[in-house]
Length: 487
Ligand code: GLU
Image (cartoon, rainbow, N blue to C red; front, side, top):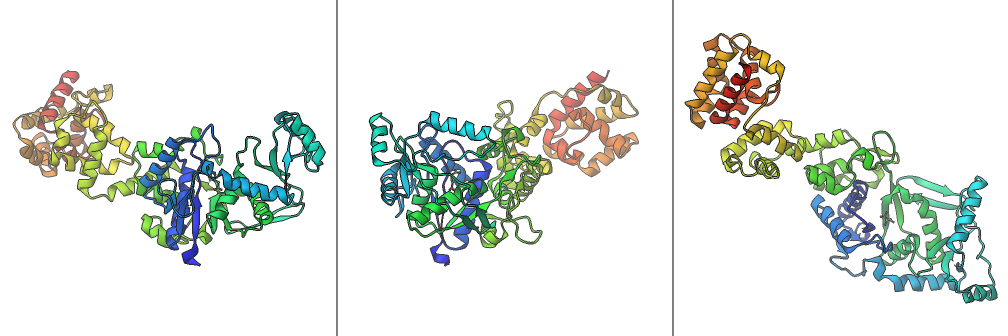
């Protein structure tokens, strides 16, 4: 069966890609690539007011950024095109005509007001809203009369009065009892196909073998299954992937933080980290392995290991993955990336250090362990390159103690008389111990005053890495300024 696999990712182009959509796209990609199958990217642009070509582009860019590609779609055509639903109206029209002919569907003249009144009445009775069936059995004469009033009909599918079982590769057999679903609109009164209808016609005509999508679509599936049956079309296999929840177990939304893939990109997450993390939201390899490249995922992925229970989106875990991927970059590549992100801050964009190869690598080595996402880089570099540091009261007090002042004056002197290389030696572990010996201090009594004077803070990059990064001139001037604040 492997050569025949055809799957699709079918976003509505109404905005950028949500992390949930990205995960659905990824699972389709992994399934297709793992089985030498075909991935179709279809634009479900039937919501004319909200859909746009720009949004199609944005979604394509987001998918490409993740490292995903596809075989057929709006951008590249293919044998089953067009791949944009607004360009497929004729096909929906033909299928709707067939359903009207066999009376599997009928024209419905209900106005939005009538339908709204039905809905409120059902609600008042404590019942789930379901189409009343008002237009189900109209005679030809009644239809003509309504049409002569100027009413434009929608086309409604006559939902068969029988149980529907959706055989789902993730959820098993899901039962929808007879009568639980009302007749539903397949073509709106403006002539546009409704989602459930367009999806069935497209999946069928595009020879889709597996429909892998989010389980918010599970309630649509019995409707779609009934349409396939009425049109005597073979059913694809369905796999509904569990929702992604926020840590509070509510639906993941804006108030929990970023939800658009583009926001993660902007914050400085790396695509391989996101891919790795998203793959593990709802799929597991069956052991405790966590780190996978896209290729490794392609080999390891299987629908059988997709979980029915909701996945919880854990920002801290995603940051952990990102930190791992950043650390795994070769030093030079990491340095280039850090500098590119640092240069986004106009206060430091033109600092000569950013084009000094040695400094760049030093930076990458020094702050590498402290950076989880690339947007952490600019503030860290700005702290290194800024002219002044302000000392708090505690720091000022600490610098009055013991030999702090003489130690700092000594270090400032060394800095004033060193070039970059000499300063690197003077601030190496041994160099600093030697400085300490001159003032009878070691350990914290040696390191803490220096750190406080040059950064104003108590923790951070180890001094032998930090001091050469600041460079002798900056160390000398920061010490001078700290000592003047202290007096
Ligand atoms: N356009 C639908 C969505 O964005 C896709 C539904 C489907 O995959 O069938 O959720």
